[in-house]
Image (tube, rainbow, N blue to C red; front, side, top):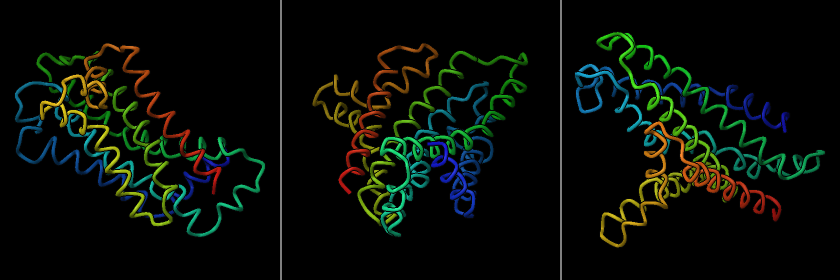
Length: 237
């Protein structure tokens, strides 16, 4: 499993696309939060918090994470290296979990520089340090749970086609539906209880700074489910 993880990291950073994906995520966030005028601009908000960042980050994840995962198995199928991979002393679960861990680690690496936002808000607060750390920590944990689920979805869609773009588009569609689709159905008046099936509702719950086991179980279940069907798909190839 560790060998697969290292292979994924090396493959990602061996290409300029890897650095470009992370740079685009960080630059876009920075522009929305500190430069462009609008509802998300922290300097124009008049109060010290990171609400804007935690609102837009899940939407950026919808494109960042599929961009990271789209080549996970697509390249293996396209190049025919999946057969070589299967001949190695690795189980299907080790292959899946190794690729999953590699992709998730890349997302964590992309998130680490955003901690400078926390430091900046702490310094800009009046008085200094006037920041709800409980909510901030909860929101970061929510992003990690969300990233975990998106990564599992992206890994699964990469097994569906040897074309990276197709895998990317399918991952965006599925992730978007799970994040916002149930909210949209509830807004249409079908049933308010549908919100409980959406990632957004559970993400907002964790972001309040209180970790509810129901929210944790929800994200773990989504992640395990997509990893399981990824393993099944790999098994039949």
